[in-house]
Length: 166
Image (tube, rainbow, N blue to C red; front, side):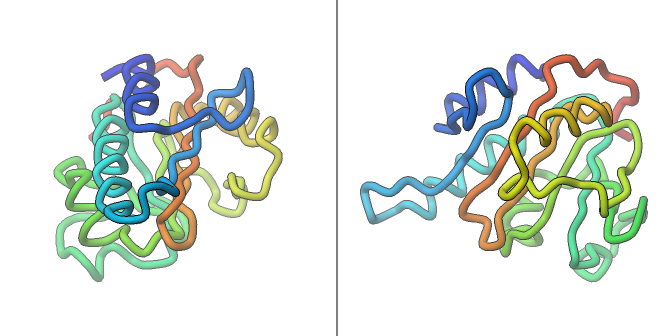
């Protein structure tokens, strides 16, 4: 998987660019038709998460919940409220068993970022978010809203793999 392929997955999933010239996408529940919206969003989220997880960087999860309580397998803590996502965790498993409530941030990077520095992609200026991602060597930052019905996905097109996912 490449970042160009991720852009194609995002577009195919119905994610839309939130600002011209910035690689920041919004993925949310469709407003119409009113039935079946939850299932459709979930499948699109799984497709996006699978594409993100297929990229050659280590994935980190910033979440108030401790994943070691959900799963007894190795979830090494990388920073406060931040864990390295084990490579065996599939996108569907993560989303259906652990991340369904929302309020989490998953990002790809060569190292864990101090969680106090992570931008709130729903409140911050989008240009600031793009600069942050680029400045920290983060090829992808995926921010899930509090109820998981809306995601913000930031893709740094200039990112070059530094570490292969463990």
